Image 1 (cartoon, rainbow, N blue to C red):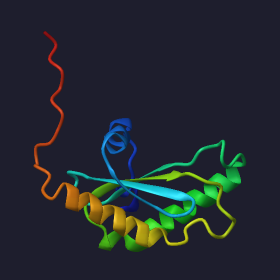
Image 2 (cartoon, rainbow, N blue to C red; image 1 turned 135 degrees about the horizontal axis):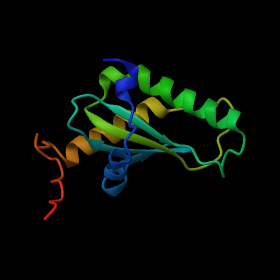
Image 3 (cartoon, helix red, strand yellow; image 1 turned 90 degrees about the vertical axis):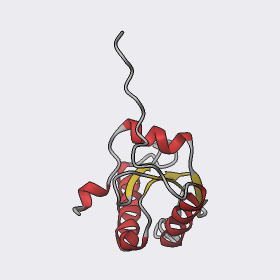
Length: 128
């Protein structure tokens, strides 16, 4: 699996995680998780400009989150994870305890939805 395949890019995937999820958090970040059908974990991020006005700071946080996710990728269940910045982090402390938080959110999600049916796709609206 390529690292690019481990990313959430579709708005519908983000909406699905936002609608119903299990959460875990650090001081600065909240991790939301929901089981998926792809068979491997995927990551999405919401890093608000109002908390970090400078692009260089937002990009640093994104790099730290991606690296933490990459390090625990093999240990995570097949869930979609969305990381949301909830407070302005101290430089260098962005990803503290994030690996443990990914695992905790993933295990909570798998406990809540123990077996996700293989055909849990939303039906397409008919064009009658």
